[in-house]
Picture 1 (cartoon, rainbow, N blue to C red):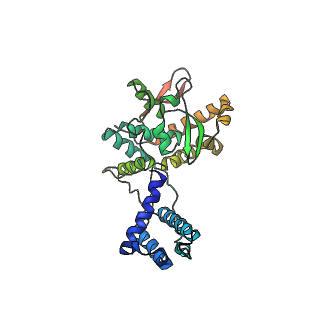
Picture 2 (tube, rainbow, N blue to C red; picture 1 turned 90 degrees about the vertical axis):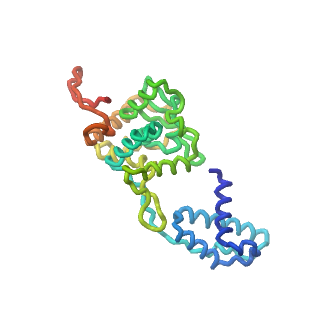
Picture 3 (cartoon, rainbow, N blue to C red; picture 1 turned 30 degrees about the horizontal axis):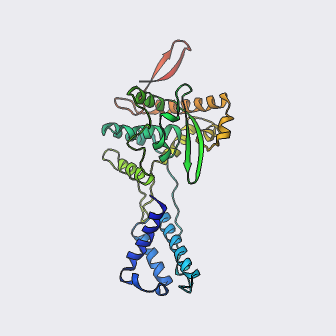
Length: 308
């Protein structure tokens, strides 16, 4: 969705709210009317951030009219906005994540299953996961090197690929896959990806309400919750905070080139330890989300986790 479309929607929303008054001269728009518009938007369940953004944009529009001498005062300046506590993103529980994986398999949504593994094992954002492809994969070193896009930034990030993501990618390659890991989602815009994922959460059998009770309908679960899930699970597995920050943090190209071998390997070991800990606590039985089994390593004489 382009910025121009968002601007147009804000203007259309206010114009429709005005109704028959939309053709009246600008000076007749009062602060009481703008306050009533804001209150009605909140009453309809508009997100706090959306309503705040709309008021901010309309304030700039009327400020421009004021600068050009069309009106004497800006009615949106006096609009009082409610201060509401916005709950932080919550991580998925293990049971919730397993349920999501099982749902994608039941509905044969292979691309969304891959998206879930990418989001969990790399802590990458929604759009970044949808854009990942074999071009970003170093099979010899089993690392993903991709451009992390957020706002106007475009930074390079390197993440070790460990199980269960490694197994998912290996199966993708074994099927002759090349290019985007999630081809049907690769070119979708962020807003479409988000809404599609919320529909997945609302599927029968998933049973997760993506909205907090209350008039503002804030999402308690979203794809971004996976970005909070990985560090939460790594912490539960006893991984050092500094290592977790290295996995989920933002790095420049120069910093990536300066990575030492043992630094990458420490990140890999942390991811393997954390996700093996998750596998050990995952539900057992047919169709479990984390298909690991313990087996004896005859060479090292130690228990390891094997992808099956």
